[in-house]
Every structure is written in structure tokens, then in C-alpha cells.
Length: 255
Image (cartoon, rainbow, N blue to C red; front, side, top):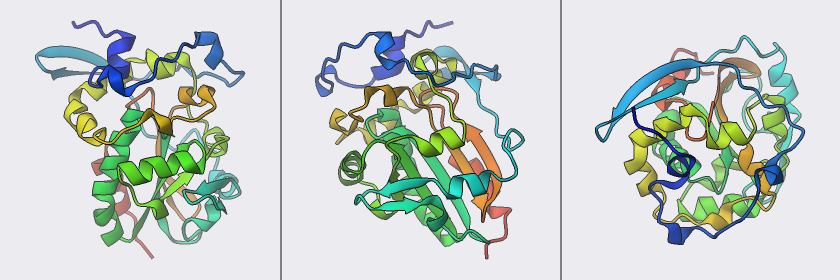
């Protein structure tokens, strides 16, 4: 079995010249936020003649309260243009179907790959009457960097600098989750997509609050305020398969 170091997981496909040298000790990133390390399903896959073992997230709405839609609706974020907006104003809160993709942060190259996949899938979701919403950690100016350089449609991109939505949804946070979680090994199967998404990448999109880089993301599907699908990323690059998300949406009548 191949041994995966933290350096490989973080930037195996990225030229060192694209990154500034930043010297932070692990304690720099620590915060009082709770770190959840519950076990997940283990999967094995092969990439470039190497065998990797990773842990796979499972999707379940069971851990969320029935009023999670109400709690999220009053959370305020920012448009990429810098205007404050409530979640309840992002889609029809009665019958509208929305996919809410929470990225880690705007300077995460794995999130540039996810954002690229979301952009490519957006016409398919649009044709099905599904609103596609991407939220990232950072200020609106950081969101604009991703939107302009990837590129990504600004009217579907939102900034959550204080990680309010992430806290409401209980998404994972911590040093181990970010740099050492086995689920991150799945990124090795998508290195070609990561490389393509990073053609115009810049680390300048990273939040000024460096503790934000320890935040994990997730994927959620709502119909109105009803939560239909929930999946928390176990580690960096552990993204939900968009085909699965689309299948959930197709099984849901759209108003």
C-alpha cells in the first residue's frame, strides 16, 4: 500500500512556484471549534498503479433537526459583488429545489476543481429547474478572484467570511480533517481535473483569516426549507459526486 504524506495530499500536482512560503505552526490554526472524528466507510481505489485506501462520507439527513431549513434561512452571507443576502432569499423557500455546495475556502485548489465541475454541470441543473448555489469561506473580494480567474458565474457564488452557514450545518473543522484525513486520498483519482482547474489559480484567493483554511465543506439539497440530501466532506477534496446530487434532484418534483 502506498504511503501518503501530508505534502502529497496538499500539493502533489502544484508547482511550488505558485505558492508563497507561509510558516505557521499547527497551533496557529487551532480554535475552540469542535472537531468531529467519527468513523466513516472505507473504500479502496487504484490510481497510477498505486493502491489507496480512503474513507468515504455517507449522505444522511438523519443528524439534522427538522427545522434546519429555518435555521439556515436566517443566515446572512454576501454576494460576490459584496452585497449582504439571507439564505432564504437565494431560492424559493416553498417549492424551489436548490443544491447548496459549501466549498472549503476560495484559495483551496481542490475547491477550484469542485467549482469547475459545478460550472460544467450548471446547464444540466438549470434545465431541470434546480438552483445551483456555491458558498465559500472568505470575503467577497476573494470570491471574485475565483469567479474571474476560473471563471465561475458570479450570480451563483456567495461568500461566508464568518463561516456562519458552516456552523449551522455542523461541517467538520480541524487540522487533522484538513491535512491528514484518509478521505483526501480520493483527490488522486482526479489529478487531471485539478490541474486543469488550476490553470489560472492564485493563492491570493486564500482568506486573510488563516484559521479558515481548516474548514471543511459539504453538499446539500433542499426543496423549499426541507432538507432532502446532506453530505459532509470528511477531508480536503472529499467532494460529493455530482451525478448523485443530480439523481436526488430528478427524483424531486420541481415547482
